[in-house]
Length: 637
Image (cartoon, rainbow, N blue to C red; front, side):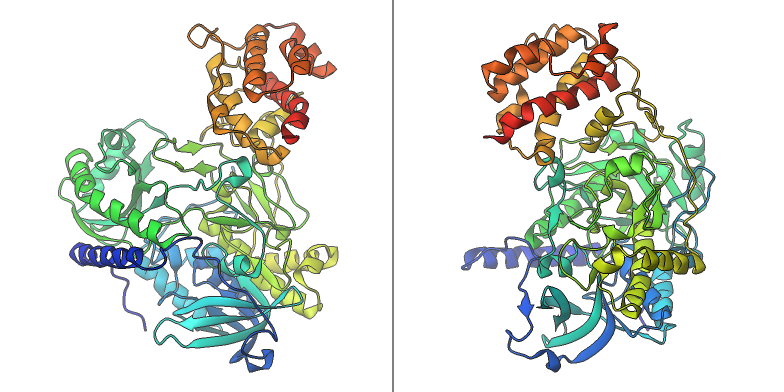
């Protein structure tokens, strides 16, 4: 049996970080620095390595890589389908972010009627916890029990993936290394499910993917990492009463969770220039002990071990000052002491594979129902800052959206499904779909799909387009408690004449409506807002339209920046777009087309003819038509 999860002692952590510093110096002095993508590696083709396929140590029907909650759900679902299943991972204990990461408050997904959307195995797990916030030792016990109770499921810990083995574009095995004794082991299976952090197996096998937010032109931009920390001596009653009386509908708490203290934390002056702090998300452990999710570490490269270690050290050093600020300013926390830090960083974003289908931000906003839906989500689209200067954003709060099975199926490589936050999600939709309950739903679906694919002797890509097999998958998930009841909800702009323009700008992550969905499509567009929108859209639209811009385009030399109108007019729009034409180096033949707004189609021109001041939705549509006009020149560079 595993012992109850303990957080490391802060003094022990200082010694550890000192040792890490020595190791970094040694590495830097050697022939090669720590660099590159720690999740990239070699790929072995059967018959070309130092072993034959017949020499695998173990053979299974389904192997699930990753001891995170998503992987546990996949493995349990597979075993309950009667398949001999191996769950394997590099940690000592199962649980991942909910145990080693210390994230003990669940990002729940409900529809407007209050129905839990992530049922099935997630609900089975959740109902064995203390509540939305839980004791991490409880989560560990529940995960271990779920694994132990399945006769068809075996699991191995402390095995680190080294290489996948491919045969004719299909994964047939994996090579791992035991972290205790360094021994290499060989495992074969008929189907694989990748639930590892960063979809390590998929990446090493050659599955295409995007890093962070590169799909909107922000290469190597990732949501901030977080170091969860533990405090003792919290006066829960005092803290809860303060939040209930602060008059803010977006703060509050119950007997297990507290969320808020935004005003109290805004006055914190960070010591390290890269560290940021937001309102406190507080999850109760037991008694007066809590875990805090609030400390943001932007600019951590999730694929670089050195970057992760440096980010962790920066955050740990900041805690001395942060805890003192909390003690002096947050009601109910006047006696708190730092009791420990999480074993692992909370990495929100790394890579998302390219699947047969991709869930994008418009699918989430418009509540799209996919024919092959295997689950649903509704968590607010939460984009945590990507740099110390960037803001935290809540793009909008969806009523619900569906997760397509094809988002789990890589566009390339057979015999593999990818679940969790590295499934085929656009970087902005990822802000909602990355949460653990949605990942466990996709994991359960993958486990069941493995059985159906084996029964029908189909690979996953064949199964993904087989209507009968998808119907069987959905039926089986429903029989296990999955919630697939679809309700039609309207969405802002559904009847707008400028819906395609709205989709274009929303697809770039540039519509920020907040928790209350305040889109304001029919309101006048502030001129200053449009200036920022145009500059940012020119960068972010590059991947969509297939062009790249110089960095100087981020600051277009707009005329009269100091004396512009309050709201966007057709005259100010003309001057802004004409300035953009010059800075973009577009040909003079486009001067009249742009300055006189002749690129607008007939319907758009007619709709804006009557009013000099332009609305947000009109501005979005005009921008779309402007981009469609200038893109051929940009692509030709």
